[in-house]
Amino acid sequence: MTLTPQAFVAKWKRAELSESSAAQQHFLDVCELVGHETPADADSTGKEFAFEMGVAKTSGGEGWADVAKLDFFGWEYKGKHADLDKAYQQLLLYREALQNPPLLVVCDIERIIIHTNFTYTPKRTVTLTLDDLLTAEGFQRLHDVFFEPEKFRSAKTTQQVTEDAAAQFGRLASILHKYGEAPQATAHFLMRLVFVLFASDVGLLPQGVLKKLADATRHRTQDFTRAVRQLFQAMAKGGFYGSDLIKHFDGGLFEDDSALDLDSDCLDVLREVDQLDWSSIEPSIFGTLFERSLDPGKRAQLGAHYTSKDDILLIVEPVLMAPLRRRWADVQVEARALAEKRDGMRQGAARDRVAAQLLNVLLDFGDEIARTRVLDPCCGAPRGAVWQYPN
Image (cartoon, rainbow, N blue to C red):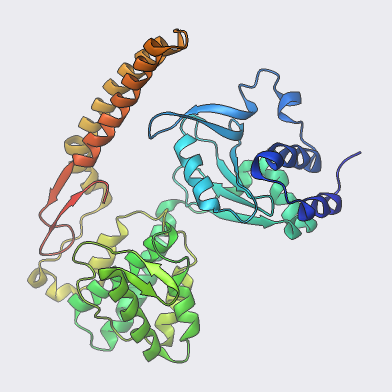
Protein backbone atom coordinates (compact mmCIF):
# COMPACT_ATOMS: atom_id res chain seq x y z
CA MET A 1 0.00 0.00 0.00
CA THR A 2 1.40 3.42 -0.99
CA LEU A 3 2.32 5.72 1.87
CA THR A 4 -0.02 8.73 1.94
CA PRO A 5 1.25 12.28 2.53
CA GLN A 6 -0.84 12.42 5.72
CA ALA A 7 0.73 9.22 7.10
CA PHE A 8 4.23 10.33 6.10
CA VAL A 9 3.87 13.73 7.76
CA ALA A 10 2.32 12.29 10.94
CA LYS A 11 5.14 9.75 11.28
CA TRP A 12 8.02 12.14 10.78
CA LYS A 13 6.60 14.97 12.86
CA ARG A 14 6.64 12.60 15.83
CA ALA A 15 10.10 11.21 15.11
CA GLU A 16 12.92 12.21 17.47
CA LEU A 17 15.54 9.90 15.98
CA SER A 18 19.18 10.86 15.48
CA GLU A 19 20.48 11.56 11.99
CA SER A 20 22.08 8.13 11.65
CA SER A 21 18.94 6.36 12.82
CA ALA A 22 16.50 8.37 10.72
CA ALA A 23 18.20 9.13 7.42
CA GLN A 24 17.85 5.94 5.40
CA GLN A 25 14.40 5.07 6.73
CA HIS A 26 13.22 8.59 5.97
CA PHE A 27 14.52 8.35 2.41
CA LEU A 28 12.89 4.94 1.88
CA ASP A 29 9.60 6.47 3.02
CA VAL A 30 10.13 9.38 0.61
CA CYS A 31 10.58 6.86 -2.22
CA GLU A 32 7.34 5.12 -1.26
CA LEU A 33 5.56 8.45 -0.92
CA VAL A 34 6.41 9.61 -4.47
CA GLY A 35 6.11 6.15 -6.03
CA HIS A 36 9.78 5.64 -6.86
CA GLU A 37 11.84 2.47 -6.49
CA THR A 38 14.25 2.35 -3.56
CA PRO A 39 17.99 2.51 -4.35
CA ALA A 40 18.45 -1.26 -3.95
CA ASP A 41 15.42 -2.06 -6.14
CA ALA A 42 16.30 0.47 -8.83
CA ASP A 43 20.05 -0.26 -9.04
CA SER A 44 21.47 -3.50 -7.69
CA THR A 45 25.01 -2.40 -8.60
CA GLY A 46 24.88 0.79 -6.50
CA LYS A 47 26.67 2.71 -9.25
CA GLU A 48 23.83 5.00 -10.34
CA PHE A 49 21.49 5.18 -7.34
CA ALA A 50 22.65 4.27 -3.85
CA PHE A 51 23.00 5.11 -0.19
CA GLU A 52 26.49 6.09 1.01
CA MET A 53 27.88 6.62 -2.47
CA GLY A 54 31.64 7.05 -2.22
CA VAL A 55 33.04 10.26 -3.68
CA ALA A 56 36.31 12.15 -3.95
CA LYS A 57 35.96 15.63 -2.46
CA THR A 58 37.05 18.62 -4.52
CA SER A 59 39.05 19.73 -1.47
CA GLY A 60 40.89 16.42 -1.36
CA GLY A 61 40.19 13.23 0.53
CA GLU A 62 37.14 11.02 0.31
CA GLY A 63 33.57 11.21 1.53
CA TRP A 64 30.20 9.55 1.19
CA ALA A 65 27.04 11.19 -0.10
CA ASP A 66 24.12 10.01 2.04
CA VAL A 67 22.13 9.25 -1.12
CA ALA A 68 22.79 9.94 -4.78
CA LYS A 69 20.90 9.33 -7.99
CA LEU A 70 23.24 10.28 -10.81
CA ASP A 71 21.80 12.73 -13.34
CA PHE A 72 19.11 13.63 -10.80
CA PHE A 73 20.37 14.60 -7.33
CA GLY A 74 22.82 14.30 -4.48
CA TRP A 75 21.05 14.16 -1.09
CA GLU A 76 22.57 14.89 2.31
CA TYR A 77 20.92 14.44 5.71
CA LYS A 78 21.32 16.20 9.05
CA GLY A 79 19.47 15.71 12.32
CA LYS A 80 16.41 17.76 13.23
CA HIS A 81 17.11 21.49 13.71
CA ALA A 82 20.68 21.05 12.37
CA ASP A 83 22.51 23.58 10.20
CA LEU A 84 21.58 22.57 6.66
CA ASP A 85 24.03 25.09 5.21
CA LYS A 86 26.80 22.73 6.35
CA ALA A 87 25.08 19.84 4.58
CA TYR A 88 24.91 21.93 1.40
CA GLN A 89 28.60 22.77 1.67
CA GLN A 90 29.33 19.03 1.85
CA LEU A 91 27.36 18.44 -1.34
CA LEU A 92 29.28 21.20 -3.07
CA LEU A 93 32.47 19.24 -2.30
CA TYR A 94 30.89 16.05 -3.71
CA ARG A 95 29.11 17.35 -6.79
CA GLU A 96 31.91 16.85 -9.32
CA ALA A 97 32.38 13.26 -8.22
CA LEU A 98 28.60 12.85 -8.55
CA GLN A 99 28.87 14.11 -12.15
CA ASN A 100 27.27 17.46 -11.29
CA PRO A 101 23.65 16.39 -10.76
CA PRO A 102 21.04 19.06 -11.55
CA LEU A 103 19.80 19.13 -7.94
CA LEU A 104 21.56 19.19 -4.55
CA VAL A 105 19.12 18.29 -1.77
CA VAL A 106 19.60 18.68 1.98
CA CYS A 107 17.19 17.45 4.63
CA ASP A 108 16.79 17.58 8.40
CA ILE A 109 13.59 15.44 8.37
CA GLU A 110 11.42 18.52 8.98
CA ARG A 111 12.66 20.37 5.87
CA ILE A 112 13.74 19.31 2.41
CA ILE A 113 15.73 22.10 0.73
CA ILE A 114 16.37 21.73 -2.99
CA HIS A 115 19.28 23.69 -4.51
CA THR A 116 19.56 23.80 -8.28
CA ASN A 117 22.94 23.02 -9.84
CA PHE A 118 22.30 23.74 -13.54
CA THR A 119 25.01 25.48 -15.54
CA TYR A 120 24.44 28.91 -17.09
CA THR A 121 21.20 29.49 -15.20
CA PRO A 122 20.57 31.30 -11.92
CA LYS A 123 20.59 29.14 -8.85
CA ARG A 124 17.19 28.53 -7.25
CA THR A 125 16.36 27.23 -3.79
CA VAL A 126 13.04 25.53 -2.96
CA THR A 127 12.19 24.65 0.65
CA LEU A 128 9.57 22.00 1.44
CA THR A 129 8.36 21.63 5.02
CA LEU A 130 6.40 18.61 6.20
CA ASP A 131 3.21 20.64 5.96
CA ASP A 132 4.07 21.62 2.37
CA LEU A 133 3.93 17.94 1.44
CA LEU A 134 0.22 17.96 2.31
CA THR A 135 -0.39 20.39 -0.55
CA ALA A 136 -0.64 19.39 -4.20
CA GLU A 137 2.11 21.85 -5.18
CA GLY A 138 4.52 20.71 -2.44
CA PHE A 139 3.99 17.04 -3.22
CA GLN A 140 4.53 17.69 -6.94
CA ARG A 141 7.81 19.48 -6.19
CA LEU A 142 9.11 16.46 -4.30
CA HIS A 143 7.89 14.13 -7.06
CA ASP A 144 9.78 16.20 -9.64
CA VAL A 145 13.06 15.75 -7.73
CA PHE A 146 12.90 12.02 -8.54
CA PHE A 147 11.31 12.11 -11.98
CA GLU A 148 11.66 15.54 -13.64
CA PRO A 149 14.49 17.63 -12.16
CA GLU A 150 14.46 19.86 -15.27
CA LYS A 151 11.28 21.46 -13.92
CA PHE A 152 13.47 23.27 -11.39
CA ARG A 153 15.54 24.97 -14.09
CA SER A 154 15.11 28.74 -14.14
CA ALA A 155 13.40 30.10 -17.23
CA LYS A 156 15.99 32.88 -17.44
CA THR A 157 19.70 32.55 -18.07
CA THR A 158 22.28 33.95 -15.69
CA GLN A 159 23.00 36.67 -18.24
CA GLN A 160 19.33 37.70 -18.41
CA VAL A 161 19.00 37.91 -14.65
CA THR A 162 22.25 39.87 -14.48
CA GLU A 163 20.90 42.31 -17.05
CA ASP A 164 17.66 42.66 -15.05
CA ALA A 165 19.65 43.41 -11.90
CA ALA A 166 21.78 45.98 -13.73
CA ALA A 167 18.65 47.63 -15.11
CA GLN A 168 17.13 47.89 -11.64
CA PHE A 169 20.27 49.47 -10.25
CA GLY A 170 20.27 51.77 -13.25
CA ARG A 171 16.90 53.01 -11.97
CA LEU A 172 18.47 53.70 -8.59
CA ALA A 173 21.32 55.62 -10.23
CA SER A 174 18.83 57.73 -12.21
CA ILE A 175 16.84 58.62 -9.09
CA LEU A 176 19.99 59.58 -7.18
CA HIS A 177 21.22 61.64 -10.13
CA LYS A 178 17.84 63.44 -10.16
CA TYR A 179 18.44 64.42 -6.53
CA GLY A 180 21.82 65.90 -7.47
CA GLU A 181 24.06 63.23 -5.94
CA ALA A 182 27.63 63.23 -7.30
CA PRO A 183 28.22 60.41 -9.84
CA GLN A 184 31.29 59.09 -8.02
CA ALA A 185 29.44 58.95 -4.69
CA THR A 186 26.47 57.26 -6.39
CA ALA A 187 28.66 54.61 -8.01
CA HIS A 188 30.48 53.89 -4.75
CA PHE A 189 27.25 53.58 -2.74
CA LEU A 190 25.58 51.30 -5.28
CA MET A 191 28.68 49.09 -5.31
CA ARG A 192 28.31 48.71 -1.57
CA LEU A 193 24.67 47.70 -1.89
CA VAL A 194 25.53 45.15 -4.59
CA PHE A 195 28.27 43.70 -2.40
CA VAL A 196 25.81 43.38 0.51
CA LEU A 197 23.36 41.51 -1.76
CA PHE A 198 26.09 39.08 -2.88
CA ALA A 199 27.34 38.57 0.68
CA SER A 200 23.81 37.98 1.96
CA ASP A 201 23.09 35.26 -0.61
CA VAL A 202 26.35 33.37 -0.01
CA GLY A 203 25.93 33.37 3.78
CA LEU A 204 28.46 36.03 4.74
CA LEU A 205 25.68 38.34 5.95
CA PRO A 206 22.20 37.59 7.33
CA GLN A 207 19.86 36.35 4.60
CA GLY A 208 17.76 39.12 3.03
CA VAL A 209 19.27 41.83 5.24
CA LEU A 210 18.53 44.68 2.80
CA LYS A 211 14.96 43.59 2.12
CA LYS A 212 14.23 43.32 5.84
CA LEU A 213 15.72 46.76 6.37
CA ALA A 214 13.76 48.25 3.45
CA ASP A 215 10.53 46.67 4.71
CA ALA A 216 11.04 48.00 8.23
CA THR A 217 11.76 51.58 7.07
CA ARG A 218 9.35 51.82 4.12
CA HIS A 219 7.74 55.01 5.48
CA ARG A 220 10.80 56.25 7.40
CA THR A 221 13.49 56.43 4.76
CA GLN A 222 15.92 58.39 6.94
CA ASP A 223 15.92 55.45 9.32
CA PHE A 224 17.11 53.28 6.41
CA THR A 225 20.11 55.56 5.92
CA ARG A 226 21.05 55.38 9.62
CA ALA A 227 20.59 51.62 9.75
CA VAL A 228 22.57 50.89 6.59
CA ARG A 229 25.41 53.06 7.91
CA GLN A 230 25.43 50.91 11.04
CA LEU A 231 25.66 47.83 8.83
CA PHE A 232 28.61 49.32 6.92
CA GLN A 233 30.32 50.12 10.25
CA ALA A 234 29.92 46.52 11.40
CA MET A 235 31.27 45.20 8.07
CA ALA A 236 34.29 47.53 8.22
CA LYS A 237 35.44 46.37 11.65
CA GLY A 238 33.39 43.33 12.56
CA GLY A 239 30.83 43.35 15.35
CA PHE A 240 27.15 43.11 16.08
CA TYR A 241 24.41 44.48 13.87
CA GLY A 242 21.32 44.03 16.01
CA SER A 243 21.48 40.42 17.19
CA ASP A 244 23.64 39.31 14.23
CA LEU A 245 27.41 39.04 14.52
CA ILE A 246 28.90 40.54 11.36
CA LYS A 247 32.30 39.46 10.07
CA HIS A 248 35.08 41.89 9.26
CA PHE A 249 35.21 42.62 5.52
CA ASP A 250 38.72 43.59 4.50
CA GLY A 251 39.51 46.04 1.72
CA GLY A 252 38.62 49.65 0.98
CA LEU A 253 34.97 49.32 -0.05
CA PHE A 254 33.74 49.89 3.51
CA GLU A 255 36.51 52.14 4.74
CA ASP A 256 33.84 54.56 6.00
CA ASP A 257 30.11 54.37 6.72
CA SER A 258 28.92 56.95 4.19
CA ALA A 259 25.50 56.27 2.67
CA LEU A 260 23.16 58.20 0.42
CA ASP A 261 19.54 58.94 1.29
CA LEU A 262 17.05 56.77 -0.60
CA ASP A 263 13.38 57.57 -1.11
CA SER A 264 10.50 55.08 -0.98
CA ASP A 265 10.83 54.33 -4.73
CA CYS A 266 14.47 53.36 -4.18
CA LEU A 267 13.51 51.08 -1.30
CA ASP A 268 10.93 49.40 -3.56
CA VAL A 269 13.72 48.68 -6.06
CA LEU A 270 15.91 47.22 -3.29
CA ARG A 271 13.11 44.90 -2.20
CA GLU A 272 12.75 43.66 -5.76
CA VAL A 273 16.44 43.05 -6.43
CA ASP A 274 16.88 41.33 -3.08
CA GLN A 275 14.64 38.54 -4.41
CA LEU A 276 17.22 37.68 -7.08
CA ASP A 277 19.82 35.00 -6.43
CA TRP A 278 22.88 37.20 -6.24
CA SER A 279 25.21 34.24 -5.74
CA SER A 280 24.47 33.28 -9.38
CA ILE A 281 24.66 36.72 -10.97
CA GLU A 282 27.64 37.48 -13.20
CA PRO A 283 30.37 39.52 -11.47
CA SER A 284 30.50 41.68 -14.60
CA ILE A 285 27.52 43.55 -13.14
CA PHE A 286 30.00 45.54 -11.04
CA GLY A 287 31.44 47.11 -14.16
CA THR A 288 27.99 47.64 -15.67
CA LEU A 289 26.78 49.44 -12.56
CA PHE A 290 29.87 51.57 -12.35
CA GLU A 291 29.39 52.64 -15.95
CA ARG A 292 25.68 53.39 -15.57
CA SER A 293 26.14 55.22 -12.26
CA LEU A 294 28.50 57.83 -13.65
CA ASP A 295 27.52 60.84 -15.66
CA PRO A 296 28.74 60.08 -19.23
CA GLY A 297 30.01 63.64 -19.58
CA LYS A 298 32.31 63.23 -16.57
CA ARG A 299 33.40 59.66 -17.22
CA ALA A 300 36.83 60.53 -18.63
CA GLN A 301 37.46 62.99 -15.81
CA LEU A 302 36.77 60.31 -13.20
CA GLY A 303 38.90 57.70 -14.94
CA ALA A 304 35.96 55.27 -15.17
CA HIS A 305 36.07 52.43 -17.67
CA TYR A 306 33.70 49.52 -18.02
CA THR A 307 35.33 46.28 -19.14
CA SER A 308 32.97 43.67 -20.55
CA LYS A 309 33.09 40.03 -19.50
CA ASP A 310 34.49 38.98 -22.88
CA ASP A 311 37.29 41.53 -22.58
CA ILE A 312 38.03 40.36 -19.03
CA LEU A 313 38.26 36.72 -20.14
CA LEU A 314 40.52 37.72 -23.02
CA ILE A 315 43.15 38.59 -20.39
CA VAL A 316 42.23 36.39 -17.43
CA GLU A 317 41.88 33.11 -19.36
CA PRO A 318 45.39 32.88 -20.93
CA VAL A 319 47.25 34.72 -18.17
CA LEU A 320 45.65 33.23 -15.05
CA MET A 321 43.20 30.39 -15.68
CA ALA A 322 44.94 28.45 -18.47
CA PRO A 323 48.18 27.94 -16.48
CA LEU A 324 46.17 26.89 -13.42
CA ARG A 325 44.14 24.42 -15.48
CA ARG A 326 47.32 22.93 -16.99
CA ARG A 327 48.79 22.60 -13.52
CA TRP A 328 45.56 21.00 -12.24
CA ALA A 329 45.62 18.49 -15.14
CA ASP A 330 49.13 17.45 -14.11
CA VAL A 331 48.05 17.15 -10.47
CA GLN A 332 45.09 14.97 -11.46
CA VAL A 333 47.33 12.57 -13.38
CA GLU A 334 49.66 12.26 -10.40
CA ALA A 335 46.76 11.92 -7.95
CA ARG A 336 44.98 9.23 -9.97
CA ALA A 337 48.18 7.20 -10.23
CA LEU A 338 48.65 7.37 -6.46
CA ALA A 339 44.98 6.52 -5.85
CA GLU A 340 45.23 3.43 -8.09
CA LYS A 341 48.41 2.39 -6.32
CA ARG A 342 46.77 2.86 -2.91
CA ASP A 343 43.64 0.93 -3.91
CA GLY A 344 45.75 -2.00 -5.09
CA MET A 345 47.55 -2.36 -1.75
CA ARG A 346 46.58 -4.18 1.39
CA GLN A 347 45.85 -2.31 4.61
CA GLY A 348 49.02 -1.37 6.43
CA ALA A 349 51.76 1.18 6.85
CA ALA A 350 52.82 1.12 3.19
CA ARG A 351 49.26 1.83 2.01
CA ASP A 352 48.95 4.64 4.58
CA ARG A 353 52.14 6.25 3.22
CA VAL A 354 50.75 6.25 -0.32
CA ALA A 355 47.44 7.68 0.94
CA ALA A 356 49.35 10.45 2.74
CA GLN A 357 51.31 11.12 -0.44
CA LEU A 358 48.05 11.50 -2.37
CA LEU A 359 46.62 13.88 0.21
CA ASN A 360 49.77 16.01 0.15
CA VAL A 361 49.66 16.29 -3.65
CA LEU A 362 46.12 17.70 -3.48
CA LEU A 363 46.79 19.96 -0.51
CA ASP A 364 49.95 21.33 -2.14
CA PHE A 365 47.92 22.35 -5.17
CA GLY A 366 45.39 24.03 -2.88
CA ASP A 367 48.27 25.96 -1.31
CA GLU A 368 49.45 27.04 -4.77
CA ILE A 369 46.02 28.51 -5.51
CA ALA A 370 45.93 30.23 -2.10
CA ARG A 371 49.29 31.87 -2.84
CA THR A 372 48.18 33.15 -6.26
CA ARG A 373 48.12 36.95 -6.30
CA VAL A 374 46.62 39.15 -9.01
CA LEU A 375 47.44 42.80 -9.62
CA ASP A 376 44.65 44.71 -11.34
CA PRO A 377 45.72 48.33 -11.83
CA CYS A 378 42.12 49.42 -12.55
CA CYS A 379 39.66 47.01 -10.90
CA GLY A 380 36.71 49.31 -11.66
CA ALA A 381 38.10 52.17 -9.59
CA PRO A 382 40.92 54.71 -9.99
CA ARG A 383 43.05 53.20 -7.21
CA GLY A 384 43.03 49.66 -8.50
CA ALA A 385 43.49 46.65 -6.27
CA VAL A 386 45.63 43.70 -5.37
CA TRP A 387 43.62 40.63 -4.44
CA GLN A 388 44.49 37.16 -3.33
CA TYR A 389 42.43 33.99 -3.74
CA PRO A 390 40.76 32.98 -1.54
CA ASN A 391 39.79 36.41 -0.18
